[in-house]
Image 1 (cartoon, one colour):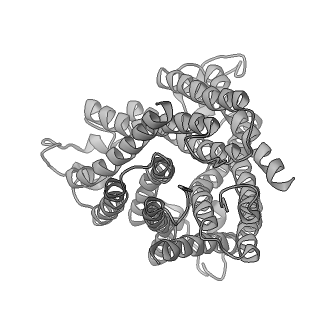
Image 2: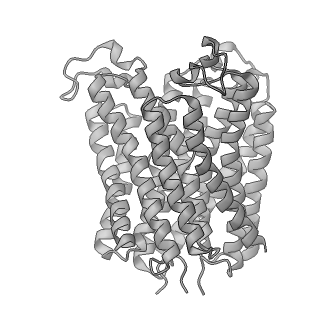
Image 3: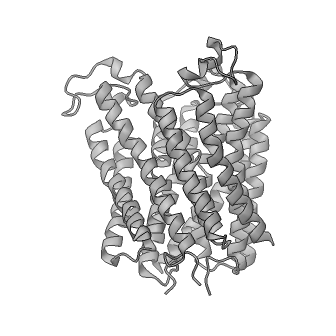
Length: 154
Length: 154
Length: 154
């Protein structure tokens, strides 16, 4: 059977989880834009202080760090440190022909904990909560990459 | 038919777009190196101030932020926030067996707008131009991930 | 033959290299956590200064940049600038049906030079050594992406 095909239920589960995570990751860019517009600041480039249709009354403060914008940037960086590894580890894990129930538990467990991690980070919950919601996803990536390694070597 | 094979024209189109985007992404690292050499600065690590063959006359200013180097780093970070999602979303989109013309429009449209976005960012065009060239690529990723989600669930 | 399957020795080699690199990348997150605990600082979020079980005696210095933590963050960022491109370029390169010996040389050469690059960066070796260990990996990605492009166009 062709493993990397939507006719394979394990791959279909992966594709659902992966596309949701991609949408989540891309949404951080849009959220940064929304925050920058709401704050009218948090920009990063010297040229962003030029007068344009979108920025009719520029001022130097617009390029200063803005905590509400920086928070989204930190969330986005956290995504970059995690999602690409999940996306590839999950794809490779599909090729090991895992039990479908286990695979779905890992894929959807990743999605759920990452979305909760976002809520916790976005609302500035204490570190311990954020860490508790980050850890399962990281362990899932490690488990999938480790399983792939064992299957590929074996 | 094996979808993820160069015998599939849709996959071949994806492979062309993906390899171009990978080369573009990697080129940012080399461009950072070139800029750091041209500026003789913009370094980031304390140990980069040690006297070596490449840096025969070190001085403390070399580790200060250098706008010409930082610009490339911002462009590179923008790539990291976008290209990995495109690379995986595009691969998954191939498995939905999209119409070849539509797929090529999305893949090559992404490449063209990202390259134009680079030119605009590199030459410090106003934000509005940069945003106009970033937006299509982001919408293409969203469309491909959304289509994959619908196909995988359906 | 199904190329993206563990029954293909070239794909199996890729899967070994890719899973090792994913584990390496994820390990940087854990190393950051370990360093932050060891330094009792290097945090990034305002809310990380709240008193919690993990941080019973918070103080404002904990949110100041800490060079020992920042070093790991720079290593992690270097991974983000390289590993995702390797992971996708390697997968695409498998679909070009390369000679197995060449493919293994590229995949395992990447893994070895990246691990040595980590050791050099972690132990703060001079820039010239770090650059010498970064360059082969970048050239490997360029070669694989270029080969994929040629195969896909041809």
